[in-house]
Length: 73
Picture 1: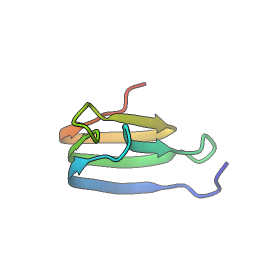
Picture 2: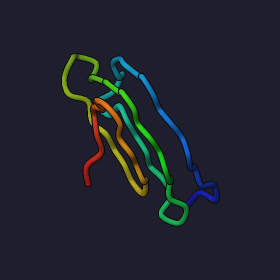
Picture 3: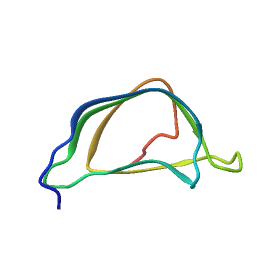
Picture 4: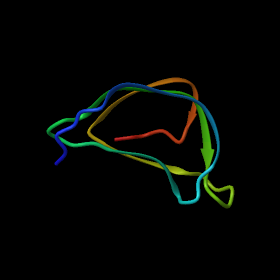
């Protein structure tokens, strides 16, 4: 477990292709979860044009505008 807590971060206007099928990964600590992480206007695809995936653990996310891929619990 990490002893660092990440908070108040904005990822904005990111467009492109991911080298792997997981384009977005927030793997935060249960003890110190990531808080107030904002994703705005994000459009990521897999390397071959397929749908990219998001892996999210112990994170508080906010979406604005078009965001793909999204985290689902």
